[in-house]
Length: 449
Image 1 (spheres, rainbow, N blue to C red):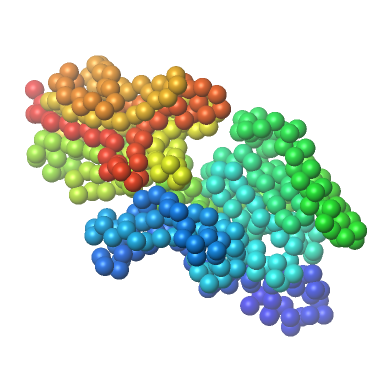
Image 2: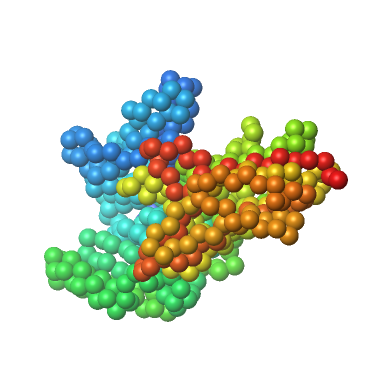
């Protein structure tokens, strides 16, 4: 252990440095030995088959007492057993010392509890694009240090924007005595972030509100404590305003490591750039002269015969400014354009050019939903012909007969107000009452003339 090894040279290692070394050991132990990541329960009746979420339910009295305000419910897709529950103990970190599992919120809360018990000053950090970690004050370095328990990462604040490819907007840190906007620490250019991604509230309102909350919290401190906190806060604000950070911008940072690969793909946090994909008939499809592709939005999976491909991005030839949205409170899931952006677009391409086959006829069924003046324009094109399919209506057509390449495109636009992006949706489905099959494309092929 680093701390134990350093203790041999105690005459050269002061208490403040030793505390930093101990923090590194705590982080490693917490990540590798103490806490566990939770994706979904496994069904003991079906050889540990992974269950799927069917929404949130009301906590029991015991779950409420233990600090769970939300309880996720799961069902086995094989035997349909549905008594799997996952209480989210966000308001009672001590309960997590018993359960020792969760996602980023539980990881951050439990780690913060342990760190505070060891006399570290801790801030809980919330990223508005859905992640949670902590910052811990290093007395040795005289600054706040980024710590992500579920990733086992220390002092790499650009991990999310550079490594995960997240588009951060608001990153707010809170503690028992302050609230502070720490977004500049986690982005390469705060002015660009403010201009393109921060629009929920006015910057002055945010600054004033944070200041008022901090004043209220500091009123509970002694004079000595308040002086120390103000001194640290002023130093931190200067660092944040100047964006001075001892981080190598050229450092290679990985995509997200915690969570299943399917879950990370759904969230778009694997850190990889989008790679266009083109569907081509395999040997069996050429023999039967039939190509069929389905997409299940609930499972976020493409289905092609016996083949399964996880991740909606992984079947697209083009994708611009869209993401997959899960509404756990409404038990709904869909694709939509990114917030504040006026348009979004995606395409699927099927290429028969490497075969001696061409399109005979096409059957297509798609699902999309619009609200207010939101618009979704579908186009099915091939052989210099374009059709305009309608949602929830099966299209059967020979208009593209003879085509060697087929492209299906959806363009999203329109909507009103701050939630305009939600007014044009693809594949909207209920996680409780729907099978989730929102795209079905079937191409019958024929020999080239």
